[in-house]
View 1 (cartoon, rainbow, N blue to C red):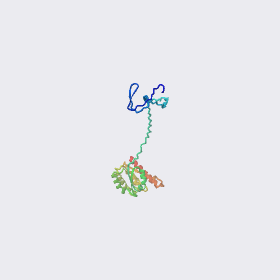
View 2: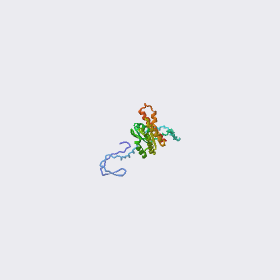
View 3: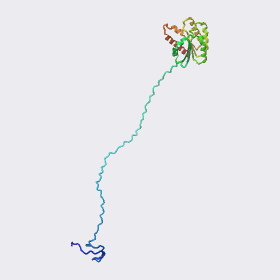
Length: 261
């Protein structure tokens, strides 16, 4: 026996028997044998689970950086100045008026003998920029040419008529003057007429030239290109090319003189 403890031993009643306790209660036993009765076990309630504690190491919070405040410059409100480049006008160059050739846009027809045939190139150069038509034939005289000249004059398609005819007419100086006069009468409606004298290689040709000069005085629109005078002043050693050039320049000057009046 243990001090202070009430213990006892008894026979365990069989199942289905009743036992009377010392305090007068009757107990029914539902077990077969029990060697020892012990005080009923008192089962303590399960303790509450403790609230979990977050044992993780606290996260270190970095100290706030000492950031200097950003200073924003106020917008510039100054007026924008726009500079327009100064334009300097180019100096005006005044060109002198173009000198107009009096024979520009003029149609010139030349009737003649071998002189115009040989000097065709020089005649075209001297009469540029006029349109030039040359009707020449070696040995031609006025009597054979007069009908064609008169027909052309009536067509009205010619501005200037040049006659380099007479060098082969020295054998009939007496009747030549009337022939010259009739030809100039037929050319009365032409704007300008230039008659070229013949080089006086014999006495008869001097009479031909005198007839041309006298008849030309009757008309304001007729000019005499005196080749006889030019040829008389030339040196006998003058080259053929030089004579042709002078012949062309003589006629070119006479045509311009006739147009200008």
